[in-house]
Length: 106
Image (cartoon, rainbow, N blue to C red; front, side):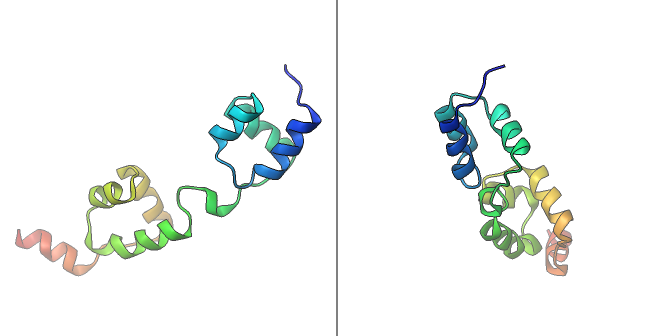
């Protein structure tokens, strides 16, 4: 087990909330798993804006969801069909009546 230097810990403490984890791990000479584990021990939290589903993407999803297929949304947002399904379920989003009528008329 490799130990962490005080310098590495200072970088982790200051940058973990907003840094790209892959890049931070590379800079620290650690694996992303090791970085996450050490952050958990040190009770560090990620900023909500760093996740894929940040507030801007959630708002865009809410705009698109009623009238687009989940496949279209996934392509537009650069994610997967199942990720769109999961977050839409969590947010309790629904397709519009027009969306379903368009499906019937085609």
